[in-house]
Image: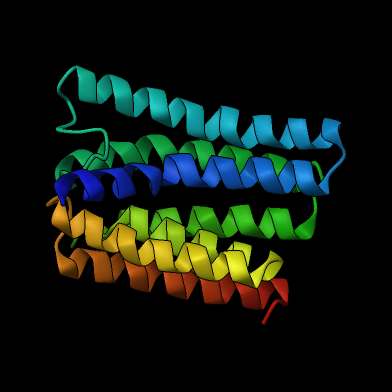
Length: 192
């Protein structure tokens, strides 16, 4: 069961699911030049630096694991990730990208900041909160795929507890954050 849980946890890692989603949406809805620029901006300026940061910190022992499952260690992850996402969010707004893109990235930033604040009290599951948020974004494009992602997030929740990376309470807090931010974002976008 641990191998299955590990596979689900890896394939459901937000550093994998969100960039894949960005590439699919951008190249499916934008001209290639704009899709490339936006994808590079978000993936190249947020996700790749985060992956390198987490890998190097895990390799040198600063982080216990790549998931940064330690609450105290996670503080430095937030201090690294939040400024990156702020810069990208500002660039998207300043360059007048689509309202939905700007609002979606802004609310991802809000989700990250709320998770950072909550981390002072409990280590919420970022896997769960970001995949719930991702499911809500997908749901507006294709409700069938959105439901699949939502169901897979249930498996991700199970995997995080099974692997001992989170308690049930931490997963529920991540679920709650993801749902609240998703509902507010969808209302702002006019999707609900």
